[in-house]
Length: 156
Image 1 (cartoon, helix red, strand yellow):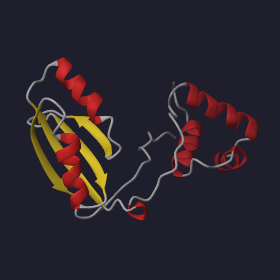
Image 2 (cartoon, one colour; image 1 turned 60 degrees about the horizontal axis):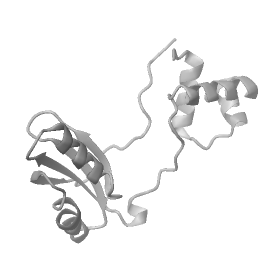
Image 3 (cartoon, helix red, strand yellow; image 1 turned 90 degrees about the vertical axis):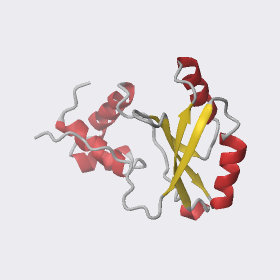
């Protein structure tokens, strides 16, 4: 789908506040409600807009510890990678999981309440996954920047 400047303004507004009514969104992007809604529906149908979510505050939920964990697997086979990915997706603590290049096979980010919860996660949830060779953790001391809005192309 080719995005024009109006589509980009719609995306920028919805990334800022996904709960906007169509009438308010249309006002902000200088369209009438009917064409605005048609554009939003087209963006959804094209997969540009995947879904709408509410972003919860981790600290308010008692999840004050963000940990990045590098996980190396014993095997790089397609089956081993698929099994790890299936098993890691079962855990709510895992916020992100990336297949990496270089020495580490995977990088995951987990959100847990404290060190004790991290220890339980590693010992009871992570280490039983078959094929894991090495686990290395890094703690986030401070969140310097967190955003969910993707950078949009600049169009005139």
